[in-house]
Image (cartoon, rainbow, N blue to C red; front, top):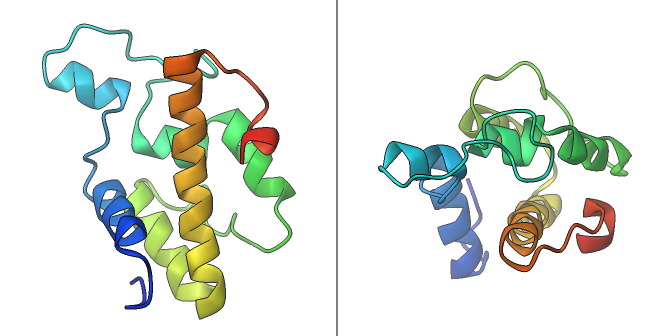
Length: 126
């Protein structure tokens, strides 16, 4: 899915995303860690990979403002894995690494909010 020229960090990030191994609030709860399962950005839904990268209204606003079409299938796929595979299949190879970088930046923005209480708009953080 990611070309062999992609940096190992990007490959690892994508693997973790597709295998739901991020420490989201939902995953932490499932592992017995007592924390609020709600998204720390919108406080409206459970924080899962799907919510962080695709469903949260803050993130949807970001994707819809993006110049090339990454919003394809936003509502068609139940799981982030299906959505990412569809995007990777339908965009030009040189834009795949940009897509992976954007996903990584969204995760960093989430961590900045959670650990540093930095609530800057996603557009500024990414």
